[in-house]
Amino acid sequence: MPAREYDVLIVGSGHSGGMAANILTKQGLNCLMLNAGPESDFEHNRVSKPVYDLPYRGFGKPGRLPHVYQANEFNANQWVDETENPYTHDPANLYNWVRVRLVGGRSLFWARQSFRLSDFEFKAGDLEGNGQNWPISLADLDPYYSRVEEIFRVSGRKEGWPEFPDGNFIEPEYGPDSESIKRLAALGKERGMKFSKMRSSGGQNGLASSVNLLLPDAMATGKLEMVANAIVREVTTDKNTGLANGVHFVNRHSRQERHVKARAVVLAAGTLESTRLLLNSGIANSSGVLGRYLHDQIYGISVVSSVPEARDGKRPPGLMGGSAFIPRFRNLKKEEKRDFIKGYCVIISSGGGANPSLFAEYGEALQKKVDSYAGSCVSGSIFGERPPRYENHVRINKDVSDAWGIPALHIEVKDGDNERNMAKDASNTIEELFHAAGWEIVSNTPNFYPPGHSIHEVGTCRMGDNPKNSVLNKFNQSHDIKNLFVVDGASFVTCGWQNPTMTILSLSMRASEYLADQMKKRNIG
Ligand SMILES: Cc1cc2nc3c(=O)[nH]c(=O)nc-3n(C[C@H](O)[C@H](O)[C@H](O)COP(=O)(O)OP(=O)(O)OC[C@H]3O[C@@H](n4cnc5c(N)ncnc54)[C@H](O)[C@@H]3O)c2cc1C
Image (cartoon, rainbow, N blue to C red; front, top):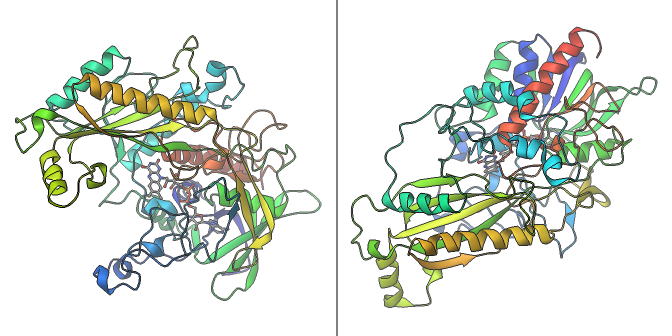
């Protein structure tokens, strides 16, 4: 890598970094992208062995990924090894930080559920009276969402509901709903619920990642250099101007340290890694809120019912099957008074079976029960919004470092009554809906996973108009250092019930165009 000054240095190659590279290189800027991990080798990694040939019989090496419930011995190499990259939390307050360091980051593995935030989220402070508004509204982000949806080939059904904004969708041919879904939709309507369909990114060839949808165009401009296995440990600043002038990074294998110079720095290391980098650099925190307001979504609540007339293989044609998506229906009006603020979506699936663990029987009796319920079940699960709170934060733990000597994060997040009351409302509401349909309730799991488990962590570098209580301005630009941008989920003010990636991509696109424009005008660099 030549010792030269780049126009823009991008840290991270996932959705947010890939979008920054795509936009900035097309604007003619010379970019260097540094990524902590290696390029993924699908051909090599796809070879699978039978479970009896694996040293841990599929369960994975103990201690390597204690917080990643999604990990097993087949996919263990895709996640960040926690023995090399530790973080700490109070044992009583678990936090599941799920990380990927391959080139492409989590965009290689995400489930692709793709939603816009609405003004019920962007302007949540007006609704809830607590000042937690974003400095932008849906109208500001709408054109960027549309362009992102085109690139990611998002499919969905347009509805015209303000709480579930439509986008630039491919509208698939939906077959007719099954009778079980129709029955629920009619009952849901009486309860203020609107039934729609899942929205998701189709991408290309089964992949909707930065490595196939964003980085190839950036590479084709000849303006992007990519260095894998480069772990950035500090953003450096000019002691005269206070502006960012580059980064220090460590080679993952040789542990050799390098400094590289740039006219602007874009952090896209994935919410908590970007914040860790800023905290370790000791910059961009005149507000004192860097690391604060970490939040995500509650997830794990699930109600399973069984439709009696569909049991024992006797289901009438057209009764079972299909799915529905119910966007947030709680707290959409100021007058609505509940024991929680914000809301949740419900994902309905019809036609599955019941997990054997839900029945008390054993042996042959259990097998009969499982066979009898096969295909007769309707389930409902949720994503619910956790409110952002000042006290839920990350800080540097000076006593713990990663394998490269970089101080690790301590994560301190606790759930409150809002989460617990929302969870209770969700499990009761779904159970009541299934009950009203005349179905047997097979199970109701009102418990939800610890923070982080949804893999939708956002906040800690929140954006805002006031530099006294926000880290970034409305263009994801540091209030303190004008040539420093954070374009991943760290900038979120509130997360909504919506999976965050469409919003991350749209913000990164908007911020990158703003940065390019500012560089052209010589306001930056
Ligand atoms: C299994 C799974 C399912 C998901 N499903 C959905 C879904 O359905 N819908 C949805 O909206 N979202 C989903 N998500 C979340 C989604 O993947 C993330 O919101 C999104 O990919 C975040 O992109 P990012 O670029 O901000 O961060 P990341 O993808 O985490 O990328 C960060 C990159 O930065 C690099 N990096 C980190 N630290 C450093 C450093 N110090 N130096 C250099 N490089 C560094 C890493 O190597 C990584 O490649 C899912 C995630 C997972 C894992």
